[in-house]
Image (tube, rainbow, N blue to C red; front, side, top):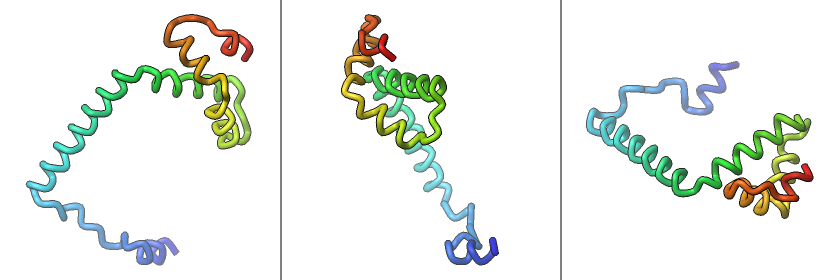
Length: 99
């Protein structure tokens, strides 16, 4: 059965040496540049880390059974901007305290 799935997906004969040395080097350079660009973006936008850490904290505290619904509710919460903003400035917000 696995063999049949591989044939249908085109994965039965992967050639991992298909990239030339030049292509491999360009790919490596692209990956490094992408990581650097991502790091610069994250440093310029500390709210991203706060959004993610706040979400994960809530997940671990509440342990929802339907994570997709929980995530949708979490990221559409009208108070999220206030909660993240207060955490960025180190000010406890009423919205953050009400959780």
